[in-house]
Length: 280
Length: 314
Image (cartoon, rainbow over all chains, first blue to last red; front, side, top):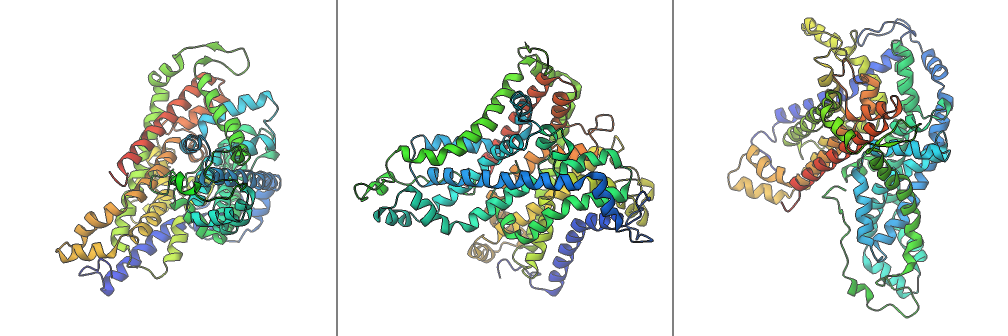
């Protein structure tokens, strides 16, 4: 096949290649194996390396759940991400349609305006977001965090949907126009039925970014029960930093939901990020 | 954003779409008010919650303000502090050093793996992709808590060193002024290497096999073919990887916050951490904003340079 060198086909070469791949896979997974084992030691115990616990202490998960208030955190996380996904994906879809299919005066400038937002670090926004939104009572509010996150992810969303719609064959739109279809019909009846994969990828990425968002939530939510699981974990470390089993259990609680989503939608994740998604 | 993905949608020739539509139907080629309802929601949210705060932060950077008392005009004093105060300068230097670990090492590792593997390890490819990509989707806070323990005195890193007879070198890696920044950086290497590998290996598969064959006929060995055929074909992917990882290195907050909080003795301070501390713990909003502005410019310069260097037609 392509580029088969003198060694390329040999059994030795193949064995070495898979050996290397397996070694790297182990290096990636080792820390997880480590904290799973650590989480199963009795709470408060000293955990040495990858030692097996004397007794499997499943109760750590319940203890960490209680100590970290993860019931509230999970609920807030779901409320925030559950609102951010539609509030990013819908405006991004209609704007991507307007910029990619309809011709708008100043459309190119507008696209550029969104693209510029792709590399703006959240640090630039968070100071003014806090002090401005404090004035209007939108700190310690789901609305404030949700709108801020939607604004943070919209540049990628608009870029993504615009390039998706630009790639749809022009003839489809034109023949619908011939039949007298208006903009709404073209978007919802003609283009959207073809846009499932693009929208799914965008929704999955936005969910991940929103679920994992830390600094914005840390700053904008002073009320501990309205924070998200990663934010709760960040503060949990300060209080229980020396209790390795408890901290490990809390980390696994925070990791679990996103890993499940990842395993279900892994193609969408990889496709989205390899096509240039930048974390907001 | 990334140069290679169909960034700015190709402009369609307007004339073509103006041909033919019946009277009465909205004409796709015409500039109309019809598009604005579709644009408005995105534009309003973006301007209200991203553009406006960005401009506000820029304004704050010229003020002396504690967030409570009325602000006073400070001119460029805050920016002078960013370049003269050792604490702030050191944080920027640290962020630049992190690029070595977040960007240079993962891209190098990704390229080596691509050279060794590309196209010749198809069995189990999906499994390896899922595993190598995993660190990308995890909340960095949880990655941080995991590695805090890996690096602790009793942690796996020291146990491993003991097991291979290097126990004398064991230490609390994140607590030692000499090793903390590198230890932090290696967490970034762990996170980003898989991303680079997945990107490059999938990119290399798209390189035309005929080019390889032509090069082989010309007598080019495997190394030579990688350098002159595969590598140029990966320009776009290297650009994407460079942008994503450099932003993570320069503007990262979460990982530092949970692992070292800037310590020991400021050895791992980074701009994002100081922006947070100045703005929300010390009430020095002017300096925090100036640092955030400098950080944004730094990111823009690096992203611009990477995109310029990895342009397909360069």
